[in-house]
Image (cartoon, rainbow, N blue to C red):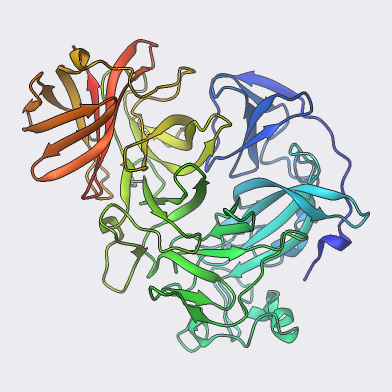
Length: 519
């Protein structure tokens, strides 16, 4: 096991950047930073060592030399093969799915003022990275810097997955015996009790992906008491949560097994299970704590990440950092044998098209992060593909506004520099024709095309669907086919900067619906 007491801070250097209107960053994780000039800057890090920064989500700066293939003098990691040598001995470099290159995925950064350097300095940006060679053999690495722009120095490899308890292979000639991880050291030092039989199956020569997670997609955050936490995991055995030692950034592994009050697993090594299991889709976990509502919100992405894969974002919340995290139907996202994941979680969005878009339609939006600025404005930052017949992707940012029940509701159009607020739409303006989208609750791959409805001045919904509506200073309630939807009515500019009246609401059946006023 490594320790920050052995880690010397690297020399920092400023990025040389070029300006861009759009950026292509997969699995974007946004971090809000106050720079040395007192300016608020959003840094976004993503898969394949991609990064950018912006002050307004409209104008982006990208490092001049940030190519993924430039791994010998990388802007964040220097010589990446040397910096992450210990991690790559297990996964992520020139092996199996990473043959001939590197698989470094889904990083996320956080400032930790209590991190201790070997020279006595305190404070570091901790950047957590995923390295992977197969869909189950992966590792999460921790690197640190005193400047968010890096470069970063290696601290430790903190979570491994895909291991076995007997000599075996998985997609290459590499031995997957757990002796290639830090588990023997953790067990010898008494940090983790003995090897757990449930981690493996099929004669101990296969990693048990029904139970144990894939160690990717790390997302650090602080809980309400200021404790540094890490949520992580993808598909396989689901999403897990660990507390981190603030001085080192290394997990405080539970050591012994346990069970939460509601029956979820507390694994001696992987931590507390929050969602998923039995290799159902579910990746990119992200937790944000909202001081105003006193809730923790858990975001996940279901489906396959390709344009035709049905990628879509989901939402749960909890009053406790360890859960349970519940949806509108008060169900957790825990998957048991035979369950289908699409039955759990509010569906934030999926594939969609309507007027006011210049893209021809959006596909597979997901793997999001959420930032709350100093004025308590919410922004959902995610990547999306398009209805263009290829896999091109870009970052999009949508504002979120909480409904009367304190659920953050995503607005239909991307953020264009104008904040949407409640109370912007008068009762006289609400009546009229709307394009209406219902995202349902499935991991559908089809493009969702809008229906046409009318909200009448006497509180009726007519047209392609029938129902009723009420509005109280921007808090909108819809009643359609026995489902109650709670959301917001507001104004925001479309992609042509024309102001549009829009609504967005969650149903008590976990559906998301959008409306865009046409006339």
